[in-house]
Image (tube, rainbow, N blue to C red):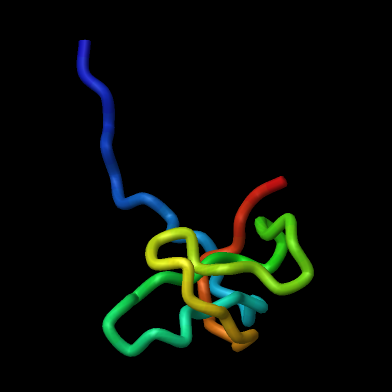
Length: 61
């Protein structure tokens, strides 16, 4: 028995609101919809975060 492993379809990319770490030495970020606080701290370095928009793969609900 064999299974075909053809090319997988990639998820469509959409503009997504995210929180991005303000610390230049940290690459931390998170999707806004995954944040529990109005103004979260970076979970990696505890610095403040700022809103920005990134083009990311769409998540299925």
